[in-house]
Length: 212
Image (cartoon, rainbow, N blue to C red; front, side, top):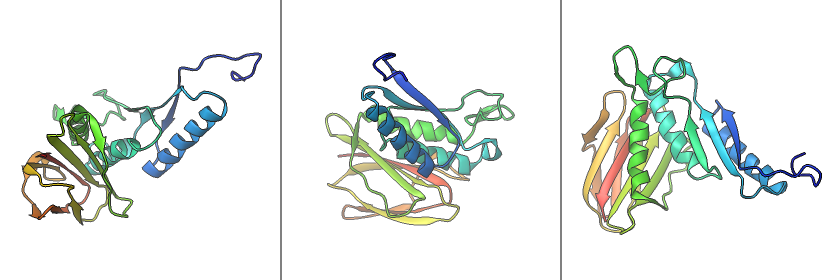
């Protein structure tokens, strides 16, 4: 209707909601972009401005790992913006802050970890094993002196993951979040040449910061 010659109107953004899986949200993001482009709205922002796995897993490490996985996975889609619902304290869908213990849920650290990549400013190539529960994302600074990798395991089983760095790195600091860790530095990884191997606990994510 709004793309017709009679009613042609600008469309700054198209926003949509989803409370489904990463795979479904990838499909929806692609479909939204496809339809916008088809009707001539190639400059219209594609925004998933409300997403959540639901209140039944609120406050759990499963929710935290899913949030980390979702943010990293959606980075590699046609989405322009991604907004979690929500950050309210006293709300059934408020999965960041714990109003009972007056602290944060583990999901808070997913946003904190992603922000470490965001402030570096440049996404770099990073591939994950052929496993739907393992999602990886990497970034580097403008001067290419600092880098980071965020590795997420959304499975209820432990996973042993190895990944290769493109060059020698130094000053590695690994920070973990799982059922026992709350954004805690860990050393449960091994380095051989440029390969890093880590045994990821169930529903966990690990942030590797390093110097290039």
